Length: 246
Image 1 (cartoon, rainbow, N blue to C red):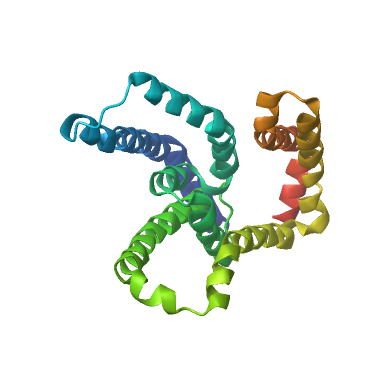
Image 2 (image 1 turned 60 degrees about the vertical axis):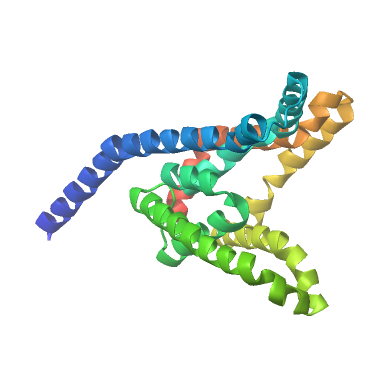
C-alpha cells in the first residue's frame, strides 16, 4: 500500500511538473499568437472600407474613436483578466477572450462542470477540464448561433411576450448562479463579506468628484478588493481556511 501511495505521489508530481513547465509555456505561446492574429484580423473591415470601397474620413476621427474606446474600456481591460484568470486558468482564458461571451457563457459552463467533478480551477486537472469546457462551449455556441441567425426571423416573432421579456434577465440569472456556487462552497458570510470593501471603495471614488476617476470607480473597487483578498490569503488565514475546506 505504501508503494502504491509512493507511485501515485510520483505520478502526481510528474503531472504537476509537466503542467507547470512545457504545457503552460505552450499555452501562453499559442494563446498570444492567436490573440495577435485576431487583433490584426479585426482591422480588416476598416481596411476593406478604406482601400476597396473608398470610404475615407480624416485621420483625426480614427484617433478620436480610439481614444474614446480607450477611456471607456480601460477599466474593463485591466480588471476582467484579473477576475477571470484565477477562475478559468490560462488556456480557458485565452479561448474565452478569443471567442467572447466570457461572463455569460464560458464561465458558467466551466463552473458547473468543475462543481460536478469536485475540482478546483487551481489544479492541473481543473485547468484541463476548464479548457475542455470552454472549447466545447464555443462549438455548441456556434452551432446554436448559426441556427438562430438563419431561422431566428421565422420563429422569434412568434414567441410569447413573456418569453421575450424573460430573455432580458438571462445575464442576472447567470451571475446569480455563479454567486450561488460560491455561497454553497464557502457560506454566506465568507462570500458576501467581500462586497463590503468593494462597495465602500466604489462609493468613495464616486464621491471624490474627479470625473476620470469616477469613470473607473468600478475597476478600482474590483482591483482593490482582489488585492485585499490576496493579502488576506498570503497572511496565512486564507490559506488555512482553504485547506480546511479541502
